[in-house]
Image 1 (cartoon, rainbow, N blue to C red):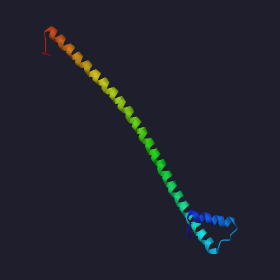
Image 2: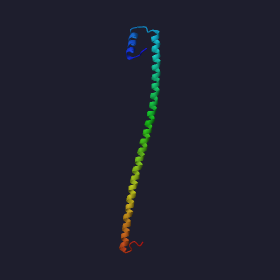
Image 3: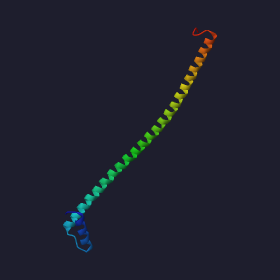
Image 4: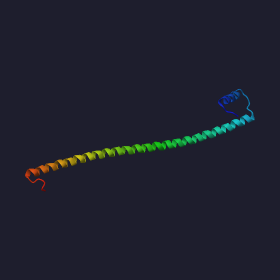
Length: 112
């Protein structure tokens, strides 16, 4: 039995009009009904699998976002620490120049 949309509508019209389906037609419809139930169950299993995978991916994305935020925070802290160290080294370099000038002023130059 062909179950195109047209044929399904024709069958519905026949049933509404009180037409008694033949045994063969009823068996065909039951067979198609069973097949449709199997397809719906398979679709449900696939959807469940897709939903599980979606939830796993959402959890993975959330973990990656958390990790990236932590990376950004550590990176910012390291940049700030590097800047402080640069300023500290620059301060020492200026202090070293001042000491060199002081020794030069005392006439000792690079003797130490």
